[in-house]
Picture (tube, rainbow, N blue to C red):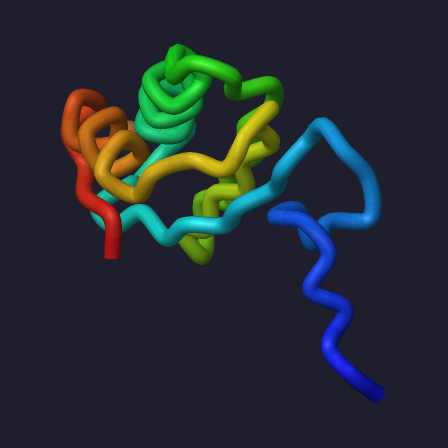
Length: 82
Ligand SMILES: [Cu+2]
């Protein structure tokens, strides 16, 4: 019943980390492609999945991402994090 508190990683495995973000302003497939490309260019990012309808972006990366880095990439593409 005590907290494990073992190490810094709480994931089930080492390696990939998944994070979800909400991007505002995307309206079409071109927007999706731009956001995917910019986030995909961040160091350690392995996969980017964008849901246009909700603006949800799921990112798989080697290490957890900084919100500031993701926000900068999104802004580079012309959009913003919610
Ligand atoms: Cu568009």
